[in-house]
Length: 567
Image (cartoon, one colour):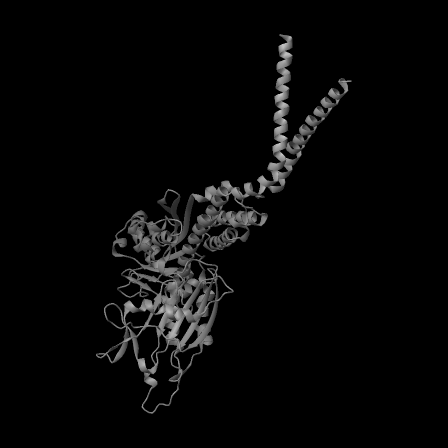
């Protein structure tokens, strides 16, 4: 009678053990993998190895230079050895992760009959135009025509003439005439070619300044990047806003043809700079807009003066009224025309030496420019207020055009002694100036894109629970491919394609970096995950673990009893 309850107890005990083992097996084999798979963070594949290669930036800039000898500049013996090609390279280590190499491929040849006819034009400007018509040089290249010392194209005190295109006229120096061999002639010619390249092509100072986002400069290098700090950073587009400030509408009624003036003076420059960026222009008129600084009356000049020290306080009060274009993320270049009221006229800006600024204007780095336009001559003794005033837009746009060039990064340093630079013409920008800007912008875009994409890769590597969607991976891969193509095109000397690929790289890299799905706050950190999962899993896991521990202890106890019986 006592055997049946014992058997029932053993079967129930055995059934409980099997149930605990079954539940544990289901949790371990099915539950844990299923939970792990359904809660894992999706991370698309990224080209990490290629990004690491781009982190160590090795840039090579290649420029093609063609030196053409006109009749009378080389002897018959020297002429037998041309055409000739020479290659020069310069290596510059910027820091441990950035290195630059400049490669100049110089081709020497004699002028053709048509080029000789062009060089016989009465003026250097006409010769420059004729040579341009004969053959248009590609972006980033230069053609230097060596002309005899007796040529009438250049004045006596000018040894180098830089045209509007990519053509240079170089007068033979006296020491070149003494050269007997071609090697000696080229040896004397080389310093002049390097001087021309520093003016018309990329310079080491410009390229290192373009790397300012990537390289930390030492204090001694700050002077070399002063010009770059004035210009806006490279951007796919810019917004240009012209504002007319009329603080006293009761005194004068202003009329300005800003649409026609922008079309005549500004649009040709923007059209020529279209490979660099996209531009949009708008205008506005602000009434009762004051500068926010009280000018000081100068009795000796019978005029109101704005000191250079007070110009920094002019912008903030005015900027609050300018408004902003919320629909665009592009940088805004502000150009303000301020017409002082009748009680503060005339108003002049004076520099730190207490001298009047000839343009009566000033510009603020990476912001814009302000010009003061005096109309006190319209106030006669019998004037009826408000006085109708038509603004001289040619005078105003001449100042704004010069400021626009500076703010967009077009360098306008004075030429070396003996150099004569042709006026820019109607477009306001010479071809070689555009090339020089494109060199800097290409390098700047590549440096910015590599920094952005490297920072993104490091961020995603450090924070493992950020989701990397397929579109992010596509943008990163696109940026890496465009960067590789831009570096290759720079090395090949294809400046136009290098700039285009660098723009695509910076667009793709910033689109990936600022994607909203990469916000870390959208995902739970580890401590919050434990706070969520412990109340769910702990009540279920504790009985299972206790049962498994009990089953393991009973199994060890049975093993000891069997061993004792055998002994």
